[in-house]
Image (cartoon, rainbow, N blue to C red; front, top):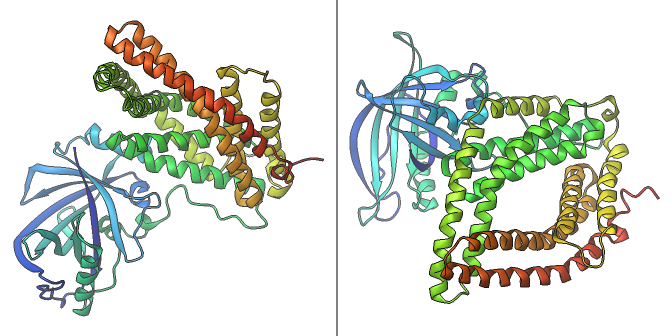
Length: 510
């Protein structure tokens, strides 16, 4: 699989439009006419066109009737919101696969699994394109981008059912933004239409492909009910999960992994926070989210531990750093095994069924009749439940609490923070302030937990390691002890700030 960032602007053009001379469009720019291309592309989607509606596309494209040398391409929006920027430019991540057309390869299908889920990918439209191209270069001969004049035919069986023309301006990742603006301005002066970010496949399929996705943001007003807030929270968190799922599969990057895990954690926490308003089947969703979150967690924990040890290891003597690097190879092997299990989970029918259920819940939450009341009447009580459990956990601590007891407090602080964040669209600043204070408490207690976990791993690894590795591990164990000692001193102050009466007034029943 090859990946690249596609950054382009699409412009409409009539039959009489001619691409103007773009030499000197920016200082020193020259143009080179490239060979004309004849492209055939078949786009795949579900029966309800859910990929197109999410701004995702899957195609198999070949050139000059040479289908054997065709390529699969999956395009995904490059940002969380998707769509185009203010100038009408599309930014999409493009993944290309040199694989046969039939059947749809698993590598392609799995990349969009979160959107397709239990449905099937089938051909939905066939486009034939006659492409005339100009390459633009700077004064030193380096490529800046390309202008493509596309005449597109929508084919059905053996005849042309429709057609359109568009001009694409695509720039390289390092090309200055001013260059794209200048080229678009010159084309518009010559008669091209306004920037239109609509992808070819959506233009060809028409209105059904331009419909909203299955999960859409929910606008809340002063008359919002508790059920409205539940739907808004689930929709927001599920959209983040669906957005980061393919990125996680594509890159495996720790940041994509973190964001996917956070989205799952937030979904699970929302289902827990709103539990008094939800029917019993919501508990099953929570359980299944816990299963897949654990699979993500095994990989994420290895990433966090590796980054922590690598950073702390920089303070070791040079010879001990080399021993630590050898020791960390064991952690890399653990991560590789966890990745294999994660891939199995994400590609499983169980995960697809879970996502189907979450999409259904986001569209129509399994709310009890009690949720059909003004949100302000029930939301404070939901946060109060979480707060009381957190306060009980703190009250149960002795003078010298164990790491396990502090981790329990951290977990309850996190749940209370998520509950406050969930009701923030209705409650506003008081909920935001509480969540911020709880976040700081959670971070301090997280230092204790991270140090405890790191020390445990180092001790286990050192037990079967050679003398040099054991020595490096021992030095880092001392680092964890020092970190834990400092964090233990800080957390009571963080709790005092979070538990101030002014942060509880909006949900207190006094």
